[in-house]
Every structure is written in C-alpha cells, then in structure tokens.
Length: 309
Image (cartoon, rainbow, N blue to C red; front, side, top):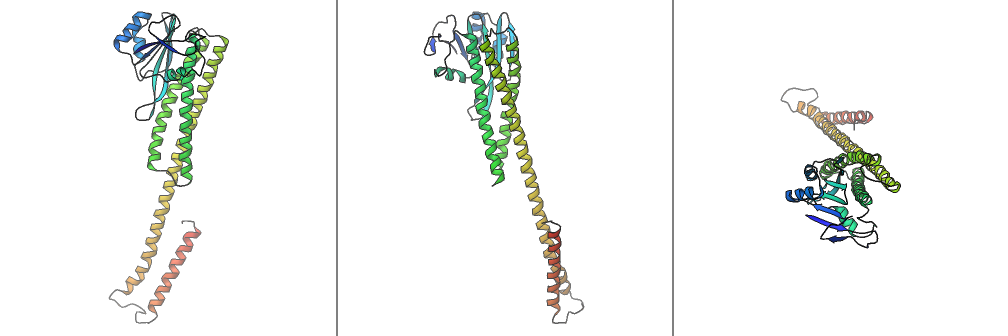
C-alpha cells in the first residue's frame, strides 16, 4: 500500500493526496513486489535496499547510494498476542520526497495525524527526526511499563512469594528487553553517523535533536541493562529462598523421623520374646518413657543450640 501525505508549514493538518508533489511524504505499508519495483523505478532507488525493509531480522544502519540516504531503524509495537516486538522501518531521504517503508502501520503516522505536534512534510529533515523521536519515546514508554511490572513482582517476592507464572513472565520480559537493546545499540551508531556525516542536511537545531535522541537512547539502554540485572537478581533470590526452604523442610522431616524412631528402639526391645533386665518390674515402662523423653529433649536442645532448625 502506497499513500501520499502532505502538510505545508502553514497547514493545519496532515492531508492525504492522490498525486505526489515536492515535499510529499511517501508512506509505504506492507508493500508488494510490484509496489517495490514501482518505487524503485519512479524514484531511482535500489530494489534490494527497499526489499530489506520487509526482512524481519534487518538491523538498524545507515547507507548512502546514488545520492539517496537509507536509514534503517526498528520500532517497537504490540503484536496480535499482546507481546512486545520490533520491526524494521526504512526511511529514505533524497530528491524531493521522504519515503518510509514498513511491514505494518507505522505508529508515528497516528501520532502525527493527531495534529498535536507542529511539523511540515516539506521540512524533510525535521520530519525524519520527528519520526525517530516518536520511535524513541515509544521505547521509553514500553521500558517504563516493564520496569513497573518487575517492581510489582519484586514486591510479591517480599510478601506472598512469586508464582510460576511470574517466572514465565520473566522469560518474556528478558526476550523483550534483549530485543530492545539489540535494536537501540545499532540505532545509536546510525545516529552518530548521521550527526557527523553529510547524509542528511542538519541545522544547529536539528543537531541538538539528534544529540537528544542519542542521549535518550543511551538512557534507555542503561534502563534495559538495569531491568535485566533486576530480573536476574530476583530469580537468584527466589532460587536461594526456595533452596533454603527445601533444606529446612528436609531437616525438619529428618529430625521428626529420628524423634519417632528413637522410642521405637526401646519399646521394640521390650516387645521381643527374650529375657530382658527389669522386664518384670512395674516401673520399667515409666523408666523407659522418662528415658525417651530425656533423650528427645536433649536432641531438641542440641539442634536448637546448633541452629539446625
């Protein structure tokens, strides 16, 4: 699907037009092979570069070929199952147009259509930076939600304990954070090339925006590392607590077995069909019972003194 959007500096809203003019945003969503070839022919683009935008594993990078700048980034979104994932976005700068190619609807499009942020498609560099800023803000939002989820699980660890579902959530969280980190790190490398190179004409104000994007992405990467460390610490703490509880349970069961078996030794001896000392004495049972109570008490005192239980 190919659409053309246009908004001048004095315009009030982003409008869809039928025929592209100078300063048009060429928006491409889930393109077919025919549309890829049409774009390549019409705008003198490399078909292979355009096709890379449909590769789910394409990593962020910055290329320049035949006077065209190809900026590959990855944006975060929620799939049909509600899980977080990332997909590639190709931004092409050159000639008189800005072209974006993505496999699904670009979240930045809905953001720009609200009209809350002033922009113009005729200001191509600012439009690109605005799209990159929205992608960065999306990462921030998702990372903050993940941080709150981790804190909630950590609070349950202190009180009621975490469940198997929480451990499964940790696996999902780690996958999401690792995918975010793998997307943001090469994105920063591309932004640095954008800042120091000539791939995109930048004014001083635009350079400040790129520097802010770099700083924001670095903070996001640090937040991801912190969250990954928290997940690992919570998992280690839960494992240590579970192991300690299991050891205490085994110790208590072992002690109970000893305490139950000890009286049976003496009572079993007097239940045998052989001659035993004092078996005819009326106080034999009371003596055995007192001896067993004394031994059990001595074992309990010893165990508590050694802090075994």
